[in-house]
Image (cartoon, rainbow, N blue to C red; front, side, top):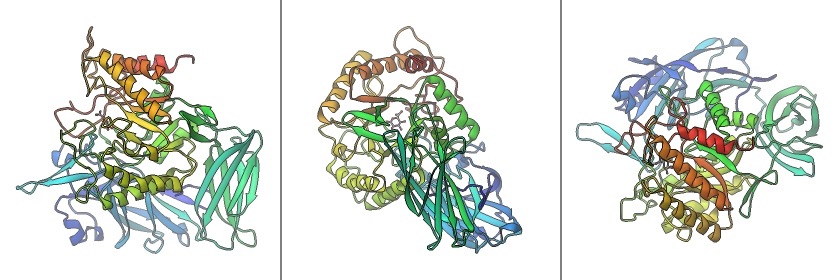
Length: 595
Ligand code: GCB
């Protein structure tokens, strides 16, 4: 799915800014037709942002149900005759959209874009009303799952099985953009090497049957280095400059569509990083060279804006990651804004790209506690075929959106699902197959929680890389780092013996209250966090199959309230305000060794 862009044949207009918002806990708006007129009793709301923390009002923060967003915008008269598209980069977790009085699109899933051709519904040279009803309910059919408790007094309370707060709203920019009526729909690029020659295979999908597709590839200085014609083809680049970790070198593929007289119909520019990725034996190879992941699990999370995209925060977070010496991160636990992946592409940062399938394990809550008796997560009454369909669609939309990003080296299709019950295999087999069918160039994985030994896991063989979240010394034995060291090493060696796959530890860490200090290892202190990370690092350095370490978490983040969380999850190496805890300095020493 192509991003909107400005160019010789296209123009875009951001609808970011203040919209109007009205919460609708009773769900009246859909029957009363609130899209038909200016929203009554509405307040100003910034887009992009979560609405939850903007107002000092618990009913806004804990709202469950529909939230109506509305704006009106002038559409330039010069757009008459163009095809006009309305695109939402994200609406969490689902939305229906109207342009003036006409319903134009509905979308399920909170973190991938959707759009509609609104040419027939907008008036160029006039002011037009755009209304979106954004719904935040999590159910057994949604990704991620949840359930709603109905109270006797009419209150509805959202429960879910992950710890991060269920922020909602228009989290990313909204766009109006034009394309010519005959236009390029999609571009798919894959890359490999033939010696020192880069081989770029492309496919350009367009609406024009008889038209000619011309493609050229330009290096970073703008010099043309290869050309081809046709909807599919191969571009060869002698002495190619590969995209590599720490070296985000990008070419630009220019695709143009021309009619039989040579007249330009459409023009789209797609960045291309030439690189290969492969899981081979117990190694993870980028451009044929073993790669070791150093970095973090992250969240899109900040004070006030919640999960709303913010360029200032994005650049700051990347700068802090670079300061620690990190070379990678995981988009835990949902696809991040496309701006983030563009930035990672340009700066050579490696990304594990994850769907929003988190919390699919009824034996752990918020990633943490077993209830005792093992129950099956996957059943007709809980996570069943409907959830599986949503999950399949989430995988399709993730790959469709992110397939051309060189920074994305691995698809993670779920975080900590039930992986032991036999039903897990039935659930995941078609999902893994679909991810492979959609993209044969990247390895696939799911993230494993400490629930079963390598022998008990029912799904590892469906995937290429073992991703492990481990909390020895925290949830398991919180005051005994010596035992943590022994148990972690024993378990990792077991994984390495049983499965000939590379292992990345995608979560390890300890909640840490900033400023709490101690001379003896004591949970919640800055010293304990540092020592725990050191213990894990000693073990990683002893087990060859471990090819990566991503600390949980980059920064403290908001969670649902609960007795195990003190004003949020405090496993950040940085506070929520991005101030370093002691562990940030010790990571920097480890990860920048040799710089
Ligand atoms: C996990 C989850 C993550 C939680 C983390 C924790 O295993 O994957 O979402 O935040 O544990 O801190 O409990």
